[in-house]
Figure 1 (tube, rainbow, N blue to C red):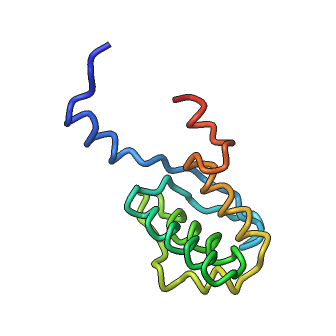
Figure 2: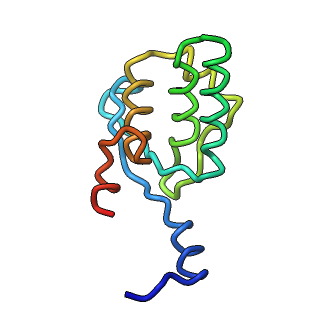
Length: 119
């Protein structure tokens, strides 16, 4: 088996997986696209985790951060920015949990990621 080249690795970075997620809590019969996040995006989640530990606050902002980073359009472009974290944090809990867990699964964070099992 040949070693990966620089070109192989750079091309793979552009293949962030995108999938549909039913989101009935945000609209009956509706769904959204979710995506794998980049390593750079993960910095926001790490910062939110640090803030949560430091302030002994709830994990709601962490779940909201996952949604901000992972909810996207059909092409994989993020629909929300960091300033939108409070929109999710102040919204209904069930769709926030559902979406954030699905995004974490897609990114191999929870251990249930099907993509990780295939690789």
